Structures are given as C-alpha cells and as structure tokens.
Length: 160
Image 1 (cartoon, one colour):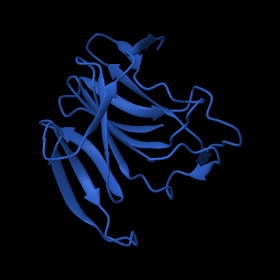
Image 2 (cartoon, one colour):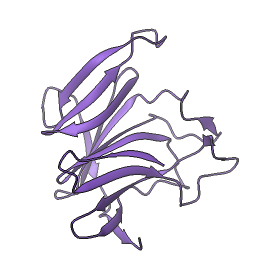
Image 3 (cartoon, rainbow, N blue to C red):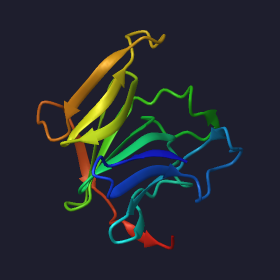
Image 4 (tube, rainbow, N blue to C red):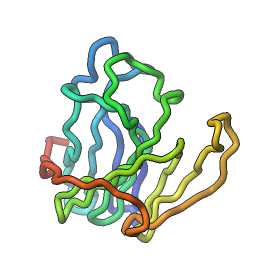
C-alpha cells in the first residue's frame, strides 16, 4: 500500500491490493489495485474505485483533500503484471465524492503526490521519460485541462 494523508490530517488515501489483483500479481509486480480513503474523524473506511479485477489499471500516489481524491494510473488496462515503479503512469484522475464524477486527462509521465488547496503537487518527467523532471502543480478544477468525465459508482464503506 502507498498513499498520503491530507495536510489537515483528517483523511488518508492509498492504493490497496486487498481485492483480487489479477493473474500473476505478486508483492512487487501487480495488475490493478483500488483506491481507498480513511476518514480519521468519523473512523470510516471507503473503497472509491472498482476496476480490479475486471479492468485492472495500476494506480499510484493516491491523495485526498475534502471531497476530492486524485491519483495516477496507466491509460490502458493491463493484464500482464508490471513493476509499478517502472509502469508509465500517464493518466491523472480526480474523483469528486460529492458530485460522483470521475475525470481524467492523459499527459506525459507524472509523479504527483499531494492535494493541497485543490491543486495536485508533484513532479513531471522530461519529454523522453529518462529521469530528471521538475516540480509542478495544477488546479484540479481548471477548465483549461481537457478533462474527460463520467459518473462514478458511489464509494462503498468497508470494515476497517
């Protein structure tokens, strides 16, 4: 599991592999994974994505702030396990828990790690994906990004 907590400390989000990961998955190589959010104030754990194992996409760097959850994932469904450290995470996804919408856009490799004041903060790689990179942040509500949006199933509360 990997993820982050909101700066206020009231919520944490992570990619969890408790649900079936897909054939051939192991501790270091995976197909799938789903995003979970824990509300520390109300002590509620919710699963917010539901694509494993039917349409598995590796996910990485889940983050949460208020009603907004964001993470990185591959733009294609993967059926062959891959080391998540070497899979190109080129899709930024945001999920608005209040509106029930999942939006995404594809870009070059990104390594965002934190939501703060509705901005996704992290690193963006160089054009040839050979390391390097620079710090970046962008507004998750901006209309300048060509977001593709669709309704999302509501989060499901699960036992802690």
